[in-house]
Image (cartoon, rainbow over all chains, first blue to last red; front, side, top):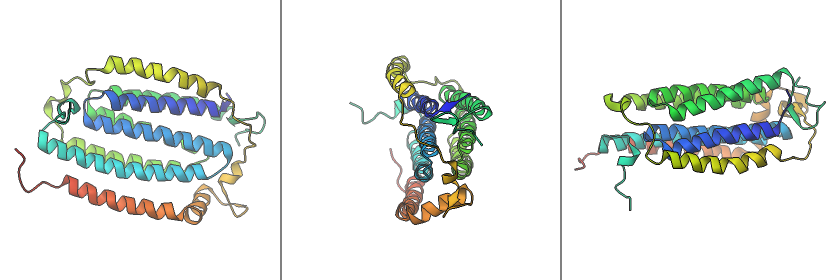
Amino acid sequence: MTITINHFLVVSFLLFSIGFFGVLVRRNFLTVLMSVELMLNAVNLNLIAFSSRLSDLTGQVFAVFVITIAAGEAAIGLALTISLFRQRRTLNVEEASSMQG
Amino acid sequence: MTGAETVPGALLTGAAGWFFVVFAVLALGTAIAVVVAKNPIHSALFLLSSFLIVACIFILQQAEFVGAVQILVYAGGIMVLFLFVIMLVHQRSVRETVAFQHQWDIALLFLIAFLLPFLYVLWTERFPVVAPNPDALRAVRGRIAGNTQAVAWVLYRDYLLPFEVASVFLLVAMVGAVVLGKRSAEKVD
């Protein structure tokens, strides 16, 4: 089985779109954050694939930074979740709509 | 090791290619399970397995350092954070609620319409053929030293400024998370 860069791009894009669907559609705010992590994972897959194809370490260094930023963003998002839960007693994103309209 | 020189533009051939197919199917399957599961604990566990499978794909691509960092930081750090928060905000009634918002069918339709042209372009795009040199991912000053040493050589010399900025970012994120997670002194009515 010969795997080219196109296989990697398709898998990475499918992973990204699954995460994208999760962000758009899930009710629970924690699952929305998990879908964001899926999207970041897909981007890392893309970076590593191109780094391997071009024999350049820049892609791998970039992927390390993406993981770092994802960790920081997950921490902030989870602190926001706790704060939201303390104020509204719910994690339903459809009920956190006081700024709507 | 991967025999990539025989076919132009190939990244993985033979048995390694089949490993990639298995890992890719598992990664997509666990990702769909993350999005579809009703219980957030199930979503978290499927996400954890998705991280481990993507780390396997990284190691298959001679990115051993990034694979190890993925397991340490994502699976060992971020998922622990998620599980702690799920434990703190867990409600008994979470099992009876619907998983998706009310617009999920239209969103799925738009997603598939958005997906198909991109998939066509990504599948048929021909990139210029570059001779692969897997030793470049492991070489330090001309000698083969391992992927971690090579990444460290590049990270601490060419990308030192982004590295320091990343550490400041982590400090800011830590302070922000503590401030946001504190109980406020006055009650909100």
